[in-house]
Length: 401
Ligand code: ASP
Ligand code: MG
Image (cartoon, rainbow, N blue to C red; front, top):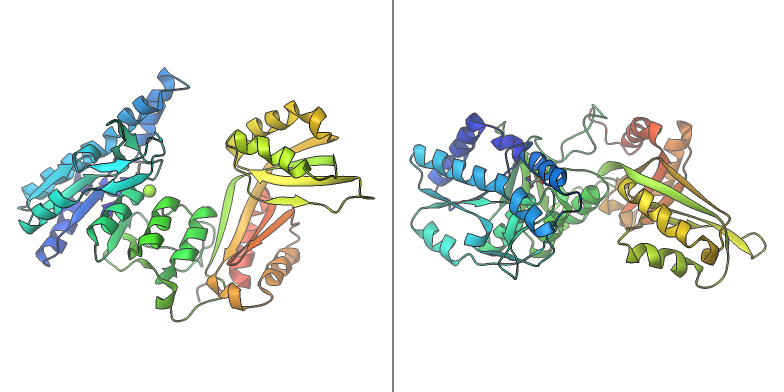
C-alpha cells in the first residue's frame, strides 16, 4: 500500500490511513506501506536548498529532501501502534534500498527484504519512507520527484506482493484529465504499455519509472482513492483486458517548446551536428521534423524540447551558428503536445486520420506530428489545449454517456 502526500497531509489523515491499513491486516494480509512526505513538504525542502545554494551539492540536497518521508513513516507507525497494530518505520538505508549514485534521480538497484519478511511472520507491518535509498558510498539518495510510487513498486516486486495499491487523491486513471473534460471516464483496467505512454505524455498520476518497473516485473498495480472506499484502476498485462478500445486515453503536456532552424544546409551529417551537442548538454529532444529541401540545398528543421530546456538549447545552437550554417533560429514556447494512446491502434487503420479530422473541424492547426505503434501526438498552439483535448475525447467515442 502506498499513500501519497495528500493522503498523509495532516494528523487526522494519517490516522485514517492507519485504519485503512488495519483493515488489510485484519483480513489476514502481510502489509508493507510506503509513504510520501506530507503534501507541500517536499516543495518547501527543495525551496530551502535552492535558497542557500542555487547550484547545490546534490548529495546534501538529497539529505534535506529525504526528511519529509522520514517524518510520515514515523507518524504512521505511531498511528498504527495506537490502534493496536504492530508496526515499525524504515528509512531507506535501514532496509536497505540500494540505489546508484545519481543523486536527485537515483535508480533502485536492489532491496534487501529479509528482515522485513522475518517481521511479517511475527505480524509486524513495515512502514517504509518512500522516495529514498542509499548510494554505493553509503550516502542518502532520492529517486526524483514523485519517486515514492517507484519505491512502492520496487518494494512490491522485491516482496513478490500480490498487489501494489497506490492510494492517491484521485480515484483512478481516467480517459483524460477530468478537469478539462467533464465526461472523462474512469478506466477499470489499463495495460502497462498504455499507462506508460499516458504517464510519458503528461498524465501525472504515476511516476513514469514506477510504471516501467511494474511492467518489467509484472507487478499488478492499482490506482485508487484514499478518501473513498471503492475500486480504482488496475494496471495490468494487456492479455487481461478483454474489450480493447482503439484509443484508451487522451493526454496533453504543456511542458513543450518548439525550435525551428530555418534554411539549414541539406547535407549528410547536419542532423548529427545539431542533435549531438544537444545530447551532450543533456537536453532531451522529443518530436523532430525535417522538410524536404528546396532544390536539394537547404531545409528547415523543427524539434521540441521541454520548456525548462529551451533557453539552454537556444544557447547551444546559437554558439554553433556559423558551423551549422542555418539562417535563423525561431523559438516558440506557446505550444502543447496532445496525444491519443491505445493498444488497439496496432490493428486498426485510420486512427491518425480521425485525429486530424477532429482537429481540422475545430480550426486547430497542427504544427508537428509524431507517431509510435500505440500513440499519435500533435503539437498545436497552447491556447487550443482544452478545445483539442475535448474534441479528441469525443471523436474517439470516449465521452461518458
Ligand atoms: N515527496 C516526494 C515528492 O514530492 C516523493 C513523492 O511524493 O512521491 O516528489
Ligand atoms: Mg505522486
